[in-house]
Length: 261
Image (cartoon, one colour):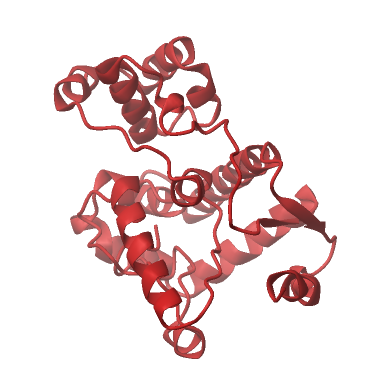
């Protein structure tokens, strides 16, 4: 979601000062009204990596969206689009679509939040339109081929993750998250509007719930997302895990030691 211009507070986008100290890439690539795809992310990634290598530097990939990570390090084959199929699916409720996906492509369904209509529809669109399971494209999201990248994960106890999620969300709201969401809402695509926290705060702005209820809903959805992240990455045998129950920055010397080899 950090590819969207203006979605700064809610995505914890690096500040201008942080970007001045360390060059960041793949930020602010699109307007919130645009439909940003994994295929476009692959193209932008390739351009960024080429430029970094031409300057004699090394890139550090940071993030938690498993599909996007695998799309660039494993060169996933990105399926086409079938607008007619997507249109046919539009009249069915999200719950029914998710049950259908569970039947047609169980691996894909296991990796998608049942309430995430956009991703459920996309997986069904591809599965029905191509005649192939959505999860089968490229080497497949269950394949872990050799990679030139050194993959490292930071493992925190769930109680620590939950506490950090709540603290970050409180700080974001204090920093103007609600005001940012309201200002962007008129020009947000369906994709952007589903970003963690934005959906819940916009529901509050529309009078559908209190701010505290919106906070709790956003926190729950973020915790659920973190659990899916954990399950996704645990399956990848190429990842070296470093664990701490305290401050993740304590692991920085070990991380730098691995990456400076």
